[in-house]
Length: 354
View 1 (cartoon, rainbow, N blue to C red):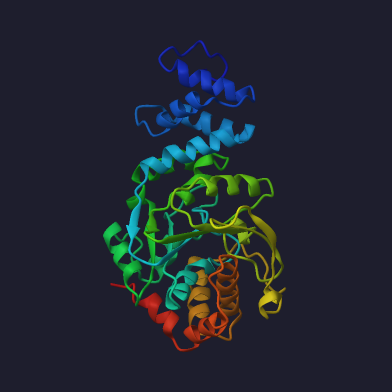
View 2: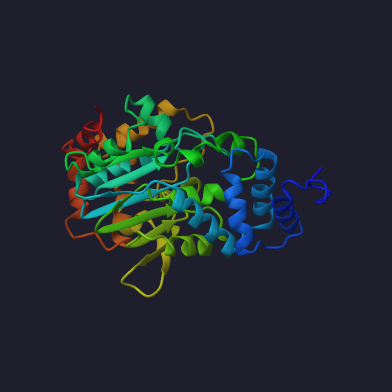
């Protein structure tokens, strides 16, 4: 009844007032936002109120201030661990996974790590709205441990024979992870889905680069603003990737936005496989029947067969992000090819199994 009459609930009057402000398509003030963010992680507050806030914000469309305050609040709650590596690349992709294309992103950290760029990926087993093929599910399928502790993940990243790791939200941010049942009961993708991938569970004491993705054009400016506010971010690049991920498609060009801290502004352009000597692959098509096992098969092929389409797709993505972040050299294309053909990339992937 609180949705229809704001005077019915005296106990939660501030929260109800915020809900009605949103329902009237008005933006919340900073004081109001700080109040509702605290309520969202408060276990004594009913899920109905939390859902009304999150659904209402998305339907209204979150303001820049609302996005910023949500990110700041949850960032301060999350765990952030510093690693002793010269560089760390954070593949900050959506936590709900893929449901039409293989989750080829799982192979990218090991490939990057094998040529000297330690890379972190993070997520959870499943979350709305896709409940898709996630890193967690693929790691289980491949016999790897998706629930390594924070210290184990740190050790993997700092080990030059591995140089990649997956961190699960259960360990890096249990308070946000506990909201999964609430999110499962909701229809819309809440602001939590926008910010959780930017929580930086790990960062380098020297340089940390973030690579992410977006789906709708409206998210270009929002994503840029949120990334600019992160405390441990040497630079970032993001693509209009496959299913909104940071995986650049191999069948078409895609928009790319980049900003480095030594630059004054973002640069916008397009990335295409042809720019790196790869042909567009028009044979790819959405497959909603794709299984976790099939997705894993793509990952294994990408790291073992340097002549395969999967390997070319992976190498293209590595070259794209390294080029955008100004980390590429003349030898990088050859290093990537050799890493796969020699078995080095697969060895880095396999070395994380202990």
